[in-house]
Image 1: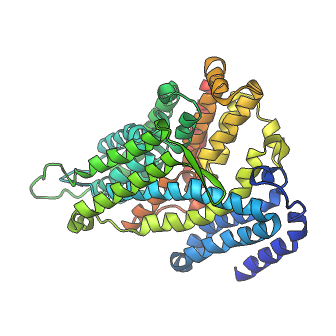
Image 2: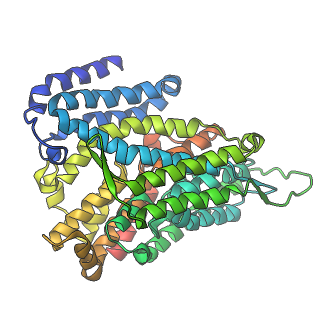
Image 3: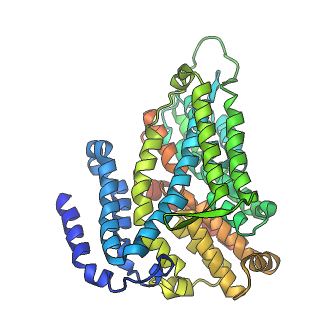
Length: 472
């Protein structure tokens, strides 16, 4: 494996002359000149996440941070040498405007949710599990997919501790609670929040309720049949003893959860002003939001007894793993996002030019959202649609126009970005966190490719084909 890393490093270094053929371009222009092979480190980190846990699990557990740093530096150093200031601004931009707020939000939700403990006698039968998933799917549009997933994943696992077959439960939890449930409001998933910031009315996303309802109902039905099949095969041991009524401990953390939601919503409505930092344009309201989220997390830590978190089997490892791996992912996906933003002037012009119908937008947005950050991918295809139908029109006027006369395209982009984040572990941040928490409980989760081959391709992709035929 070291030899492979060495060969890739040599290849990128020897490629510097062509990589650096244009050095005077701004960060906004880089996507027009970056070659398609500049995404190789991004593919490398994805393959590392997919392969190392299978072939070298012990090495991966102790050194995943070094692997993430390797791929991040392997891209960043040649990129900085080649494009100098434009490259520096691009990297600072993705870390200051995307990665840091992303991790702050995840940390806050993870911390607050870890202080909420559901106690009592709750048995995970197929019907109970369907109710759990249905509740999580509903909550995801109001407290976010990450918030809903972090609040419910531990109670869901504990309710099924007596079950032998649990893998499918976690996978469908990722499908529904960590992704598809976040379709109805800008609070549900980051791409919809971006749409809200760019002029899509807050409650417009309720127009995709039929799409979400169909997809959720279909997946819940499939889950029930699979769970009932395994439930009948298992010898369920009837536990003797007193039934303990359900109760929530640490319920004051729901106030902090509402504080997080309020902070996110405030940053969308409250326009204070902007300022420059290290050449990056950011807004005061975004920094206020980040501060509110940090305060909510700290208040949760201070006001929640450590014994409660211990009883909730709370550890910091899942958020640590996500923060480290996504630090490398965010760096290496810079060229992919830049090329996409360049549209018909970039190396993926053939893809952009071929996207015409609502079905094309659904699958293009969704496919790329499965591997890239779905928020900028959503924005890229939204801008592509606005430019196609309302060229030269101010953004908010164009958004109003597409809602009035071409709303099916916006529905396709919205559902593609949200739904297909479930296709891989990295498609949406809570996917990886749910996987990590499940593994802490001793549940054997499928590998990166195993998840796709066993679950997302046969189940999700098939259901998305039906969504396409019915709605697009």
